[in-house]
Length: 446
Image (cartoon, rainbow, N blue to C red; front, side, top):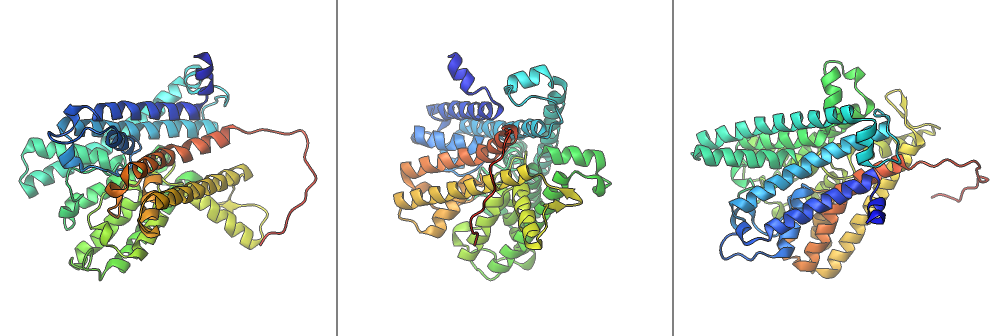
């Protein structure tokens, strides 16, 4: 027992073990007969897939949430989404503070010892701040949705409140579960539904370190940290750039945006772009989109959202750092700089490692799924990236992948949710120094 505990005696491993425990607990609850509607099968595979999707805030589903699960099952899913979203923000923020040295903790100590020995007050302040942000955004989103459901769609107040809270949690945690079989397609023309959901997704994807920086200097952007500048800037570029690309490509597609007036078309394009960042809800039929739109979606899903946020992907900061490295190399500059700051070489290697390992994971997952299923590359790649990026969008093949395909996606969701976070922290905390250096020699490149 002591040896087993010693093996997980690092922050990253504790995070993985904790999330795995929550997934298994959720799977057990969802496999109970009380969690599924009468006449539906309480499958362990289905329960495991759904629990993983909820805890990893992905949103992919093998069963229709509205018709397969009972009220108890839906509550379990909502709680799992909240635990997954809040947990990843808290743990990623604490790990980020460990890495940055803002809490003076030793890398060799485990998470429990770290928070008990030198950082109890600081860690509690961070977790309390994350809780406040989470509850504030979810409360505002739930209030707007509830009022709209009552006034615009005649829902009873109790049902409207439940729908509002469920989708507020689902959107802020970037989980993407909905209580309607068609996602939110029925609300594609309604900005009072689509905009709160989209903005909540974006808010969850920014990450608590950004909120902490904005709270201190929100009127003075020049004093923002480099992380905040990159996250906010890249989020805006990808959000509006993706919206423009999707809207332009799908503008004349009668099966998606083509049948809508100009205003709702732009709303639907913006909503879809926000959801590719890890939100996972759909207001149009993704399976009817052009292959070019799927390709744009693949890129957005792979990049993902901000570090220490509820979104997935390799993170916008990782993507931006690689861009700065390329730009410096093209300019022939010895240092990688941005905003009058020099980026450490260790950070550059970490970004490259995370990106290449993520590419390898996606490639392997795509190969395995193409071997196991009859679907073509474009749909399979979309599905794999949606799982790895914890997005939840689908071209409609999730339910037809079979048990083996579902297990592959389950692994991808878990790896995609925790892999970049824990790998980044592990690389940053595991720094070794040598007392010697080998002679330098480089092979030909290019």
